[in-house]
Image: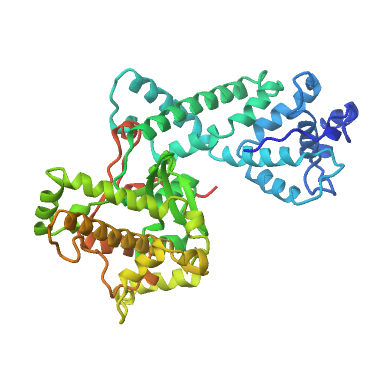
Length: 475
């Protein structure tokens, strides 16, 4: 949420179009509900926006009158979760607001306020449960499954906690203070923010992924996150093609853990607890890709902790590839919807559509990823194709470095110490997220990450079929 200093002309003592007579007219329901011809919304909503624009973000000494509070407070209560007003505000936001007395910043914040509170009915009970559970955990008490919160409940709490800067301003101006329900609502938001920040801090401190980990956005979990039911097309895709909507790579840097992906352009984003909860994280087991004979050689070279050494090298390679994705892959963008549909159709044809006649040149893929190919050449890849190609390049590079280390110790190895888990006849242009998962599963080198204890103690962990049964209707 961005905050702006209100334009000075909106803080003039002469409120634009608002006076005591106008406020008195609001008692007349016909006037209050009459649509303003300029904005296409009711008079009471326009007056609400003008009053809020006048006071919102102003100096503490600029306080509303009791008559003005009497207008704004009940509307703030009724506008929580008002999706109709939310859509009206989006239309108003497209208009020129110069000289109208309505602030664009206020429009933006009320759009956020009405949207983030769309699951208010779920929030109250969910908040009570989270608050009670947090107190129990703080007192070293364990929770059984029935006491833990669901992903849908957490999502409603998370969304509403994000309007804290807005509700703090409402409190500062006295709009919430004299209404017991709104005052309690503000207290719940403040408490939610504290608890979520603590859980997130515990997660950031305790979660450490394995090098090369892959994140797959789960279709059903994402619907819970957004509070929407799956569309017919989503259900069909989930059943026939892929249960995941997006793939990305997880890597570590000095600033923490980040997600590298194409969406629709190259992106580096901090890996958050919310990402973790609503996606499936898979870790790559490098040792599963090393024949026993080569493991013995690595043990001779690096000692009994050889696997830790290999993982350390692999982690540095992954960081080298993905740190600053935006710049390193600046000419790259996501494939078109048509290409994504083709990838889906490839799976329906008994998987035969995922094969191709010619062989992929893994050394060429390595050269492109580690060079400047994706900076100089406009190119389009599926999100999961990007993950596959960078994984291939990382493993080719790992082979090169391990081979050099063994040669330094006069240990002769195979040309390929690490087996590349992708077949050279695999059509990477048709690799959707679940095809990526299937290929790595067949190679026996991927494992679904279990939820870390600091997070698992608060959340229900449900299988896919149980998750599907709790999807709420779209709001």
